[in-house]
Length: 238
Picture (tube, rainbow, N blue to C red):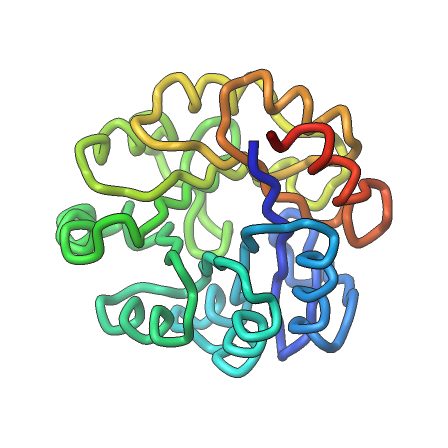
């Protein structure tokens, strides 16, 4: 089980949103690189970065912040948010991230996504954001008619590094993760599944570990001190 602290960047600041709503933003720091250093010092070996400005604009935006995080953290990072083209992938890999998370464009252009994975084997993470089991896109502003499980199965033969599965109804709400949905996806996925959304207390991590997921992303609970990173890494990461 791997714990990935989330660093969400908007306007060069470290923030968290509730259910992806830009009107429900909490700023947790004005130095994302320093935040990265904090999590690495407490034992993080992988960071999950989100370019919130990029997600909204449909292109990578926060280059300076991402580069600073990669340099300061000294650990592998994956980045999502507004990455919609081969050129975008080339750009953000050039910022020093290890993996790139593709969400909306994989659903909208599956043939392009297949080609991308072949071009960058082991560098692409499929990001599936879902509400009531259906895929949500465009920064969670739209809910499609495609089921999360069907989308994962469609791409099962591709050299994808991992699948980040987010329950957007739980994200940032401190209501606990959707354990049944994560268990179902872990059983159906051809790749390691990283759970995201709703982790509120240490026991939530234990419940997710029991589902067979390979890791989980934690955001607000870390920033508000409800979960202590070093403690849960000691308990659940072996």
